[in-house]
Image (cartoon, rainbow, N blue to C red; front, side, top):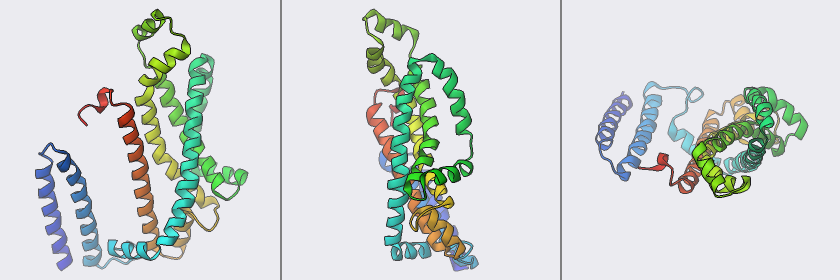
Length: 279
């Protein structure tokens, strides 16, 4: 009962603090609001688990997850390297790079736009649990097959956004470049590619989340004895839910850092765009 009361008090204090901080238009207040919200959420989680005596098999407390995190840091690091650095990051770079090059070719030849983009929409709609086993059989059980799954998942979202961005310039802007006797490649480099950057980064941010999801899910269909997906599937079978949640924490931190890194690069590259004003 003490834990439940403490959880209610902390929740009320956190709500009061966030309401007051949200009225302040400073960078410190903007940073403090999510931090306070996260800390309150973790404490309330701990209070609910301990106050109601919830079984660790159903929902382990944050303190238990933190203890397992410290005990299994070596295993978690190996899984991080296997899944995030080898599978997700490699597939992300290859898939996004291929998508950007293909977008330029599609933009250059209109018949490819009409033929390839409908196919892209069809492939993007395919469920990952359908294509992952096939790619695992094609490329083997190591990280290469996971990278292949990530390539398939990120290629078409980036392609569609890049093609849309390259077509976003106005007729007046294109006429002005022709007035300056600029050829296709000059117009692409000086006008259309910079104008497409907000669209491209939108696709890159979407792909950053898809990459990690694809790599983890693909490991459920075949993997060596390391990897976040492998560890989650085996730990669930052994009822080691604290280790499962520790892997989820690693995945959440990696995904947030991945997305945040792309967002920071976007802010530096598109500082001139109206969407970046006031940030």
